[in-house]
Length: 367
Image 1 (cartoon, rainbow, N blue to C red):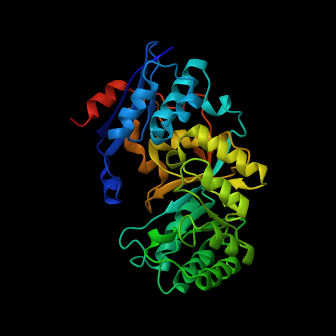
Image 2 (cartoon, rainbow, N blue to C red):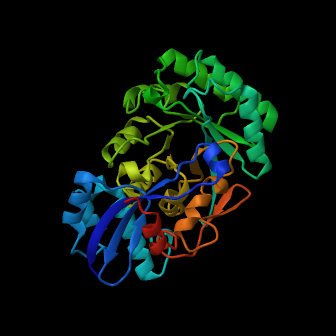
């Protein structure tokens, strides 16, 4: 079997009035890889410009199984192609990708990363509204959420968590994570601010504090992790293996959070998970939403040290399946994913677990 072509394009699928009112857009990117055996691989992530041309030079005319060779030649810059190749490999074998990578689990608990409309620091939403929306998710079976910790003064997000905790109960019934996201929050905490807030969140039984300092700062995160009890997490913006090996060497993070697309694809993520496992560290992947969750699920189900899936970004008060409902127009299945009591149940469909409708892709393709 040989790869015959790679293309990337945009589809525009109408969304319901409810979804549109909650900020869901119609645009879906597709990377499609074809073979001479009629097996086609898909990923719902763009591969554009130089990265697309580079991927074509590396992969077209080659056996799609040779992913390690392709990575050595630079395919990590086109992760949508790498994951589409895994889709082909799984379909050729008649197996889901996670089983080819050594299945670790068939059920994956999830958490919803909630971002409310308005200012990025969430100052436009009251603590009470945040609590009510999270309570709504709890009533629908979800047992974990993550919110942003961007507000000023810094104690405001502690007050928000306190309000949420009062509404939903203790950690045993609802986990709460905090996403500080380093410089993307608009301000960078000092070490003193990070320690103050880490200890405040500890008192509120927060599960982890994500990227509280400048992204990629190995030594300051290590100092913070050694000072406080709450787990410190990060790594979503890093590509390849080198930064993750440094985080592990110096103890920067208690949990690594590679992003399958950012780090270079499924195989690179699997390697990062193995690196983390060798240090006794969990590897909980940075998340996504909709069709792009398919490859993330395959990755996570193959990692023994990954215990929860991020569904991001979730727009309150849409339920996840309401948010990705329009995506069903592009597949031959009644549901994208099976979700029960806050857990994703792995599908037996081969490859990435999606039965993509090529005619629908062409119907909704943007000229």
